[in-house]
Amino acid sequence: MIFSNLQIKMKKTTVNSKKTVAMRIGGQNSDLAIKDFDKSNRVCGLTNGAFSLISLIDSVLKKTGKANVIISTWSAGLYDVGVMNELILSGRVDDFKIILDRSFKTRQKNYAVTIEDLFSPENIRTTNTHSKFVLIWNDDWNVCIRSSMNLNENKRCENFDIDNDIDIFNLFKSFSDELFDKQQAGVIESRGIVDKTFDTLFDDSDFSTKKESFDFKFDFRFD
Image (cartoon, rainbow, N blue to C red; front, side):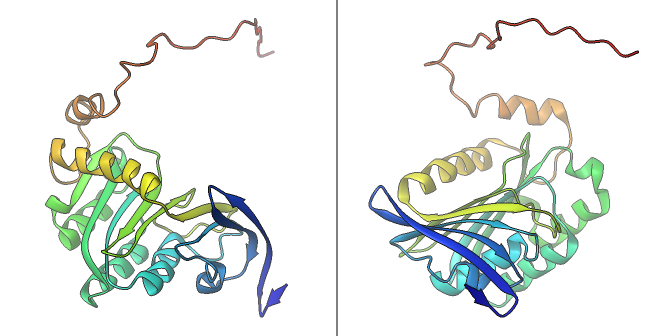
């Protein structure tokens, strides 16, 4: 099935009474990529990197209307951050928060300053994270995007899953709320500050704390 420069291979299956629209996409139209996403359909996709996470956010907001947004990302580009700011200024995004990895300020000091200037420290938290997710919600929607995409363009294969599922949403929302409640505001790079909070975010009381080991020997050497 071909839509201009967008190629989509899709298959629908039934999972927990929701239909899953699975597709492989080569093209720049994120609106078309999620055209079947609604409260009854989840979308799972592989892309060639022709559109970015900010494009998916924009496309989802077209369906939900004005909403609150939380983004968790390991990296962020200035263009995508600028687009996010425009979504806020245009009134399409109400409340906005962003979660960044502790290394971000070390890797991109000037970007970190720009992000704090745009969104203010109280809307930013830093932790030990490589998790990429977006929460988009209002009175009618509870959307969660899980993706390999950071908040920047990457011309490589990327994956994404989009659900309007309250259980999935609450898992990521409760984590975000706890992080914002416990962690110091702003872009923090101090391991001492970040690790202290990070260690409280995951309850392992029901699980063995012993690190898993594998019963095999692996000997190697470099000649």
